[in-house]
Image 1 (cartoon, rainbow, N blue to C red):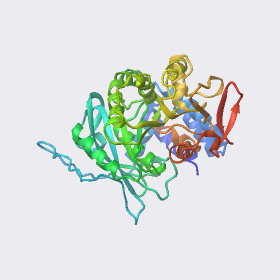
Image 2 (cartoon, rainbow, N blue to C red):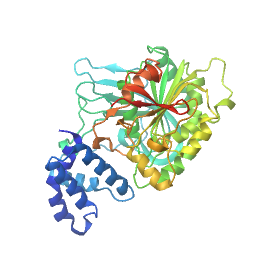
Image 3 (cartoon, rainbow, N blue to C red):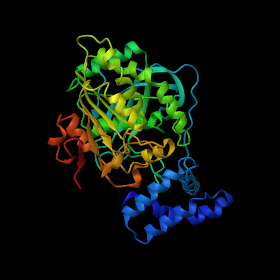
Image 4 (cartoon, one colour):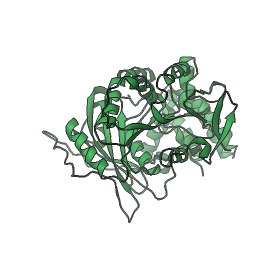
Length: 438
């Protein structure tokens, strides 16, 4: 059974109890959710259900999510789980970094542990991995996060976690992508550790992931680790985590923060290019995170890099949430700065639909009539596959293929779009782009 149908059937079962329990607090869209659940129970067409649910999600972005109410009801009806509470006092012990930090695999379970070398301008939280960094602004900090990723029984691109509709109450390393630990490092120690790790890697390239709107540090680190595993990346994986509030209701707050964060990302990218001995630096940016990347690349020609500095390899704009006209302006300024620049666009990405509603102008990541085709960038209409990555946590509403297959051929195989099996040419000589085969 698909996750969409499982979700809607769970709503069908829980809905009447929720409505009785919540009374006046029952959200105005609750009846619409129950109607969708009823349609799922009747066996209505899954694609029509997904579209209806996606459109409903767009309308709910500014309101308290019904999902929180459902999760609360499930939690209240589930058996109590006793957790040990540990109170830490005094100073936190410094992170002990081995001479060489690298990925490891448990051969018995197939679980891979990935070191994610991070830079972040989030404010510090508590000592638990999930809350090590919060959603407030801080100063640029560095460190290493350990992420475990199951490789057996997990679909490509899936950021698996305990889910209420599966009645999973705790994380299981053999099923879920888990942030195991987070440790802070001073800048010099960070550079040395990353440089040594990269020297021992099978490939001297690095991959930087920049997340989008409404993402916590924990989920950003988990996604970076999962991307590393699914892309079979042989170098080292880096994360730049800007201070997203991690709240669907704070879209405008995140917009302000991503602009504030640009100088910090620029410093992080220059570090990766100039100081760690990398051969190539690849970048994957998603949704709103593209703004920090493209605004930084605008100034790349003015940088004073050493003669031995790494080159920009693949720069990937995945469903960029940036004004389309502004994207076109900036693209002309960084043309030729990387080996290849790729834009994945979608006409079905919920985050982009919501952003267009807020701003009133097309986004660079949209497909259809608003598709952005720019000289020097390979534009791919990815409407048939999943471009959501992490953003609004809505990827479980569909069962689309992931763009990761194509990203693998792009990054690992260095293949152009005309050499990648899933893609076919579209448009005309003046406006050529690529689309996924049905």
